Length: 629
Image (cartoon, rainbow, N blue to C red; front, side, top):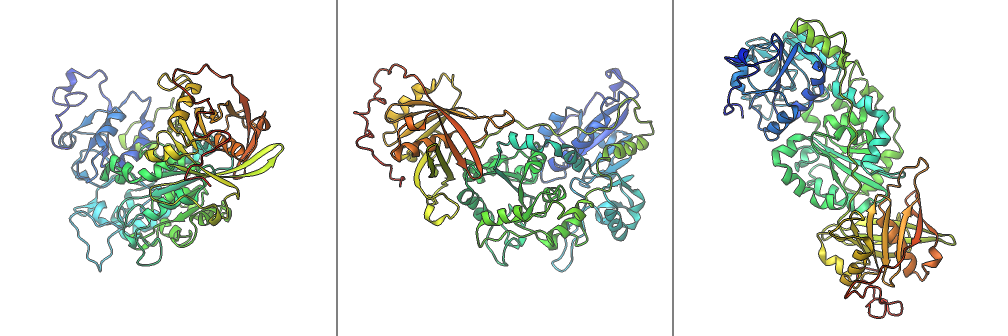
């Protein structure tokens, strides 16, 4: 990318004065090393907004092994992108980088370097400076290997977020200490400003009352949580790769309606291995309900919304601890960190994830035993100026450019946007355990587990948290395990009511009962809190959950209500006995569901779904699925 791009002619170039509209602007260059560093530059880009005296540019050093995704990110930023060679030939008033990669010393302008994480923590060998097994590599960003060129500081300003970083800088590279500027952490400030939006972020991720959101967070490299090197220190010495065990246990142990799971992975994982490959690795977990958060947008919102983070030595895990979220460390190679760093201190404090024992028990214990101030001392080292980075950074930038800050426009960072609504979607087969709590009025407890791959169906006799009662299977019509559809007790389809390919719901339901002869009930989910079901006996019913006390829709998967009604009917009760409503419990949450009979549409030609005498599953001779109990 750095060498093959055509040189720009406007707004800079040999004859740029002929073509530009605004003249005399100060030039600010953002240096992108990879997607990871670019995200921090995007944090501070709004500090120059509304100032018609400033022209911004971007360039890529081309020196990182992680160049995938950079062109798309630069296009999204919408700034003029200079080829690296042209960037080195052009005069700038200010150069801003969030990494030390590339020939930064060749750029012509006052260089400011930001951290692209929470301070400087990791030991990392400098390029062209191999480190032997007996020598500890220097701390990235605080050692002469990166900070000096020909014995002199490379940067005009080295931005730090806390004095503890300055203390370490003075001890490791005193020559660069005079360039240090304490200016806070813009990423952390955006998180702090968005904390009041926690409930909205949770609803956007489909987390309803009584549910717990579990976020799996991993940095890159082999000794991370996502890496396969057991030297990451997640479990007992010599343990095998933790990741497959973790992903499988998330589905097997966490009831689908009591927990929501999401993955926040370092951009170097996404773009180093390829988004398609990462999605493929996560496929089983995603079909069981895991939400893979995109590498650029939404990870901070997921962190704010989380009830627990299963992480490693990443900045994301540290940010989570800093805002009071319980963390459990799935990997933590202490030897890869500066022992004096706050992140290393977190590794000495937070509980470790153990392969032995129950994953759910470890998560619940971490949440229930957590105190919001547990990591208060570490949080105080995230930034010495929380909420003030915009003011401090803009003051620094404009001082370096030699012009006054715009008086009419305050220094502001962009607020974190509200993510789109992404409800839980489980397309893996589901084992449903139902216990009747009351017959009058009808009340049932439902626990659902995704069944992934060759894993056995959950056994209620071995699960003390599961309700003792009946069990049946449910399947999404779009499941990959199509063989399960033919033997499922409940089949679910999700689509709009007016979807011309499938609807109306009654028509699809009649066809589905014909298509799946072992099925006792089908459900057409056409809204976040409702569905239309048809029984094998031909009854057509609308199930609608009552709204929350604040008037918002119930976020429980409506397929739960369909399974509850199926269990009610197969347990010998009549549909009339379920009118006008039933109560369905998932964990600690109670869902009040209206049961409304719908008028029967005229049968379509060739359809026998409502003819109980011709159905293999009539009232007098029920046929049970091999997966039912």
